[in-house]
Amino acid sequence: MKEINVTRKQPNSKMCFVCGLENNSGLKGQFYEMETGELLSIFRPGIDHQGYPGRLHGGLAATILDETIGRAIMLTKSDTIWGVTVEFSMRLKKPIPLDSDVRVLTRVTKENKRFFEGSGEIVLSDGSVAVEGKGRYLKMDIEKIADFDIEEQQWRVVEMKDDPERVRL
Image (cartoon, rainbow, N blue to C red; front, top):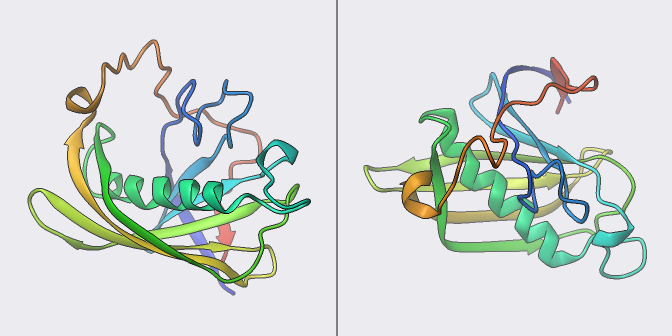
């Protein structure tokens, strides 16, 4: 494991299941751009997110991994260009325990004018990989995807007291 600098934090929203800070059932994921050109998400699954007792539901593992790969395009584009999933696949390797921080590390692997491909891993606190995933995404401006009011949805960077400046990966 090595220490990697965080270069920027990405915005959260109000009600998104993955990043919505006011969604009581959501994951409340935080997203950090790394000096390596990768995107890191950190979240803590709770009891509401379980499949088998004490384990994160596999569909929610797919959700956070897909979201983080899709957001990786914001590393090179603006915060209003998002990845809309065209294809996504994953391989479950280990169960993900509840009530401890989980890290998702993703990157863009291929890009052209309209599409990009990305890959990523869900990494447990011991550094082992629990899930691997990859996907293909359409690059779209948020205004073309949904009726998205930036102010109403509170799409902004929210500084937290535990935001890392460096991360051990």
